[in-house]
Amino acid sequence: MAANSEKGISAQAAGLAPAPFAIGFNRNNGESFVYGCLIFGILISVVGVAAQVPYLAFGSVIPVGIAYWHYPMIEKGLPQLGANSSGLFIERIGQINWSAIKETQLTQTSVRNIMLVRLNVHLNRPLEDAVNQAHTFPPWKNFMMRNWKKTRQKDGEMLIAIDLHTLTGDPDDILSRIRAFKSA
Image (tube, rainbow, N blue to C red; front, side):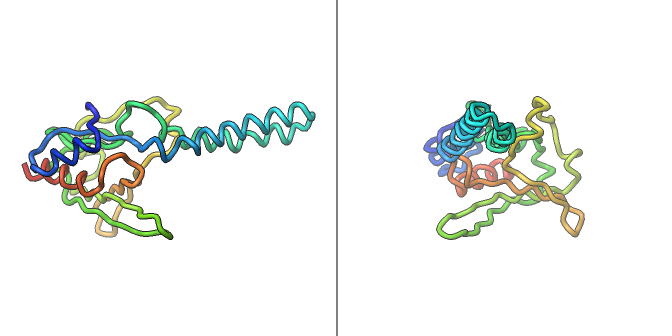
């Protein structure tokens, strides 16, 4: 899927014509965190080795591990969410068939002055049956952050909650684009 800019998504969503899109993480949210943890971990390791304090050097594993966990936030060229005529793409899940999606909705919460937005995708069948094409990814990505969470609801439905506040697109435009495909 070719990634569209945020401005391109907004312009196409205004016409509500289903047009493919793919968006990734907003790199500005993750760069300072990932690089800061990495530099801090290397600094702790160097000081621990130079001072011959193995526990301090071993302590560098924690900030380096945090940087590793958040690395997907700065990866280039890999979409986290997208849509085309085949279905809804979610990174590390794959392409979900439009007929398997019962409902999509946005939820917003505010923590202090930060607005957190989630796209809730309700499925009408199990996730394994809903996926047209599974996304293949390297095994080490299993230990990295993802921007979605799946849960089974009390009524047996599968819910996939996708964090949109970390992505480059406007949440309302994303929802409009997804609904345009769903209704087409």
